Amino acid sequence: MHYKIVLVVNPVAGRGLALHQLPAVTKKFDELSLHYEVVLTERAGHAVEIARNAGSRGYTAIVASGGDGTCNEIINGLMRSKKNECAPTPVLSVLPFGRRNDFAFAMGIPSNIDDACRVLRAGRVFPFDVGFVSGDVFPQGRYFGNSVVFGVGAVLANNERHYRRLRGSLPRFFGTLETFVSYPRPESVGLSIDGRQTTCETQYVSVLNGPRQNGAFVVAPDADTLDGFFDVRASTIPLSRGKMLSLMARRACGDRSKTRGLLTTRGKSLSISAPSTGIACAIDGEILSSLEGVVSIECLNGSLSVICDPNLPASPALSPSAPRERRRTARKGSAV
Image (tube, rainbow, N blue to C red; front, top):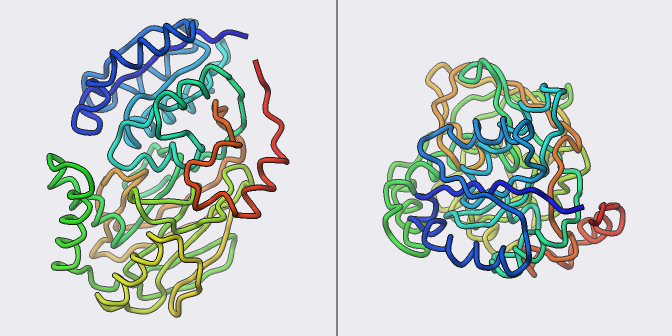
């Protein structure tokens, strides 16, 4: 099978990197004899529209050229297109040109563009879990591919945006510095995970489909994007600046050690009750708003089809992971 591809390019992703690399990408596509059309996004939400209509326009694959925000919009468009039974839903692949690329990391897409294009050309399709969050500030619901984060992680994502014109790791450095200068206070949050309920004073809640968040922190190294479960991390006691910074540094290094006051569990469905004062919320790294009510989060097992190569880990640090190795041998991908 040869795919008819719509290449969706976010011209502002990665400080314009996706647009700058477009000639090199199209040259590689031509070398690999890929059949494609390029569409540049023009505004927020445009990628949702493109993805929602891609199947009805005859496309069989959609490639996100951008970062996590671009991927999130395309996931939402594809998932909503499933309601249209007149046309099959295209499969998804990614060329990671964003600031974080956590979704591409979860897929195992190489950061090297030549390698990423070869994965696309191989065309092996695998199922992929998708999350759905609804309630409060999401009355219509919203899908996500990698994570929903509350508290410190969401504040950090927002603060990094203040320095997005800087290069390399500088936005993360200054964003982290700003986060710890105005350090979020603990908030009383109610958690229900597969019916298990608890209330805690927390500064940090992460619901992860993939292993990494904020482009650096491997919070759930054993996360499996096909097991139908989220990996949930939450601080259950107030953490000082020093303890939180130490935790973030260890997670950036892939440290798996247990931490006192950190809830580590898994679940298929969750609900989170926020305080009336609100708590910052971000989906797939994009800051959205302050949550002030109750949201429900559900894992939709294997509901998205993606082109990837699970034998190419996104990070060598994750390759020794036994659960990830078991996943590779268990998955049965369809090759073209």
